[in-house]
Length: 618
Image 1 (spheres, rainbow, N blue to C red):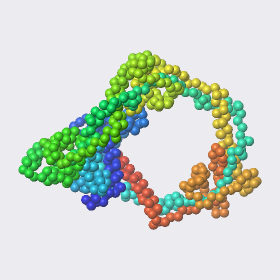
Image 2: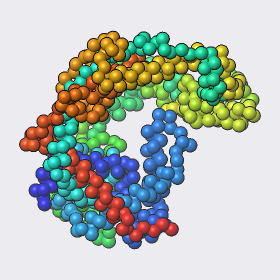
Image 3: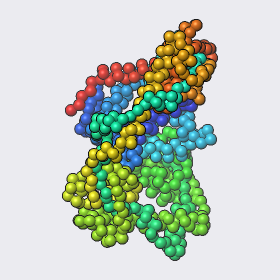
């Protein structure tokens, strides 16, 4: 099995597995894979195994946060909470069903298999070799511990082994691929003849009565929506920062304070991890006694550490700065002298002994090199405290005030104005749905209150007030007559082109010549045109490839119409595509069709498992 792992770890399947795992963990958390804690209130049971309420609610929150992060202007009120809860619960149920199926089939990876899989994954390699530091930091950036990742990977891998097995077993007859390739590579010979809009211009006439009738029949389309003109105050962290001056003395002091950060210190740690349990204290005491007796830390890590990946390297975790490890681990590591071993340190992953192997520091850049960066940082730091203070004061003042003049004068902020905001929004910041909804609320629109202070972006807040409200109005006929006339002319022109093209097609089918039909122009020949051909109107190509195959001695006629012209089409021949059964294109198409069939079979398999599962909801 180890050989299979080594071969598959570099494959597309392995990359997909890690991708799926990372997406799953980032959206649903590790509990979506390794299950919840027994004994808690549950939201469902799957074949007797519980899905806990704690797990469910946490994942609902994570999914809500994920959807908010994908919004251009995040607004919690736009989330459909019922739908999120339903989707999260169904996802947890499906995940539980698949995990149970893998267990029933006896699919599992032992520690050696998981190690082999991890060390061969490109995501954790530098220059083609496994790097423990990259592995550890990547896993921790996912919000997981090493052991949690290993457990999650083990289960996700066996689930995907089942999926891959079913998908790869999909079969389709070669005849299907051959037939599809003949159609896909098919070309057609045809001629085109253009009928310009000018040729039917005399047949297009729009009367005042038609304009009036159209106006009456479509009166709802000629309304000006309700609008408001608003006054508003914008408070932004960036604007506050721009107004803060940083003296040279303050800059020098800030530079000196930041020197330790600017000269980044990284520490190379090694650790021995002992998982919690009844024997943990005894095991840790044994390790400490053997260390005191002079045994190698690296040898003891290989023998005892539950972090089997780093254990192979003598517990080595590589170089890392602050912010990478668990807080307790970090505090212990940065308190050590080089070569020193810590006392036992407890984290969520277990109990560690930590050894500081090496320390490296980068040089501090000269002040002149980073002056602008530090000025901006210091101004923004000072502005952050001021922003919080001013935001609170603005929220309170705007809530209590009858207008915006008082809050603006009190806080030294500018009142701006905007016109013509509709319920669909307006120019920024009124492109924010939450702010627009507030602006059209009863309190603001009818009772003349200010809006609440709305966060419309990253450290940007707005409070607004309606200056004037205009109800929806029916536009008068003379205001829209020209637009209606243009619309009717375009409509009638297209209809006239359609009629003229159909007339020409019927005449050609009856054996008449273009001269007899009174058509100026000549046929343009197009030979062996493929489906994806460029240089043609898309509608023409689509029409050509939907027309019936002509008989050997004749042509089939059709037409395609746009706003500017009609194109009469004479299809002369259909040329079947060539098929090379041993060729790369044929093999690729056959594999694609087989994969589609396999995916359908796997979807049916998932549905079968889900239907057979005994799912209970309290």
